[in-house]
Amino acid sequence: MLQNISLNQNPAFVRPLGQAQNEFLQVLLSHFEVRCEEQSLVLDVDFDYETPTIWLRRSKNYIQDQLDPSRTASVRTSLRRLLLGRTRETFPYADPSFPFRFGNGGALPVIRLAGEDYYCLFYRGVHPVGWNIANGGAESTAELLDPLATIERELREELLIFDPEERSRYVFDWSEGRRMDHPDFVVARAIWQQMFRERDFNHLRELTIPLKWLSGRDRVRIRFDGDTLVEVRDCFLNINAEDFGIEIDRVAKMSVGPKTIFCDGEVVRGKLLNRPVGLFRVQNFNAAIGEKEFSPDRLFWNGRDRTGDDLEKVVLESMDDLSRRNVFAFDTRCERDSAEFKFDLCPVTDILVRRYLQVDDGTSAPWPPAPRRDQSQQFDVFLSFNSECRDLAREVFDVLRRKGRRVFFSDETLHQADFGRAIDDALETAKALVVVGSQAEHFKRRWVEYEWRTFHQDILNYHKPENTPVVIVTQEADRDSLPRPLAHRHLLRWDPSSPETVGRRLEEFLRGSATTRPAEA
Image 1: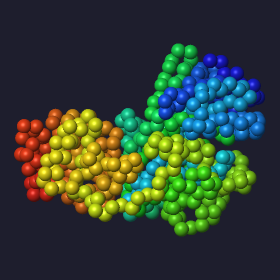
Image 2: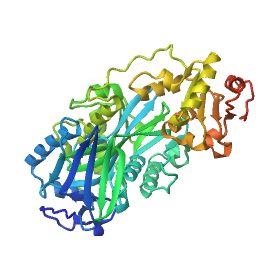
Image 3: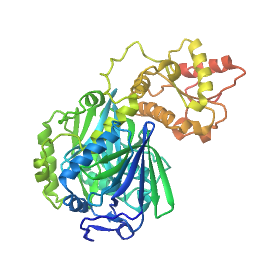
Image 4: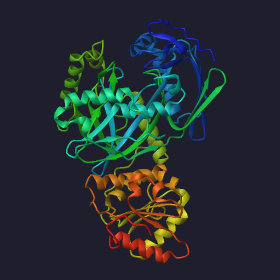
């Protein structure tokens, strides 16, 4: 589709896509369509190598200065009605004088820390000012056609996590296997190493962080160069007029140790942004949606835990640091000073959290207050399994229950909408983990991997005793085919003809009376 843009297109800022591929790519779309299908939104976009493309970060301001503020307000109202489910009408957009940037991807990190869930947000001191998720633009045509790759890269680029007491840093697994280190990651780590020589940042022990992508309901259909059709599923569509952006988002749930430090790793023109990072208790944050000022429960900046320090003071320190290092060519303090609310949510963050809540509890209402943890709900065993192995998991559950074990088995134990919090609570209290999978690939399913990685991480970080039992129950998987952290644990082959015999052996493993070394039975 020919995207006709009636704004001035100075080639210093806007070029055809085929000429613009660089470190920052966003195509300008004057035409697109969003339609509703049941509880999902479906976005259709169309572009090619001749589509006008932003290819420098300052190009965004160049375009935004030409947009009509009154048009921004009217489009904003229509989009919020659509995104928040207040209208079910198809939204065909066509306006050459008000194009939208397509090519953004973002992740909302949900951090499990010391028994509580936190949203992790970065403070943005430029328009739109406020707390923002980890997001950014594509870097190539390939990423324009694969927004999920942009999301993964942005999360890993922007969020650096380390534990100075344990001399460790957390690293993310890629969804599609280990990839080469991205240049920006290397630059960010080199800068942090210079800032924290005494901590020897580059030589910290690497710990793989338990990471679970929480799926949205939306789909994006990308028609490229006339005939290539790419479809992206299970995402959150996010369109905002204030920033004239179309963004594809996801939610990333992860678990870390209680002494963790959070750093900003985003690099602009070879310079680290080093923005303040805030952690916000999920329940309190959700209840406050609609307010205009948000203060984090935990605050980090410049590689230090600044929780308890004055928020305004820390933010001004960070902005002075940006000016001193000439990170931006313009005065960021002016943009922040002109903002009516200094600690509001950025539009992308506000929409994503609201839409995430709709998916999580099935309504548009805020979450209820966090229930007090019932101390009687302490579990001997957490039973982890994929839906394909539900029947086998049920048999294992029945055996353990007959042995008098208190077992967290989601089909029997989980009765609340906020399943994510219930699972995390059970993982923290459980004294043993049993992972069920008929075949090797079952242990790599998303929730299963999140559960055993979280449990394994608690053992590595000494939050659970080093000899905490972890048992693999399988029918066909070999030890060599299991993920490495599981390959060194007790492995028990399930014999459906003799469940009680298997149960006795499983009980020996859980009591630690069989052997202190990984065994196979």
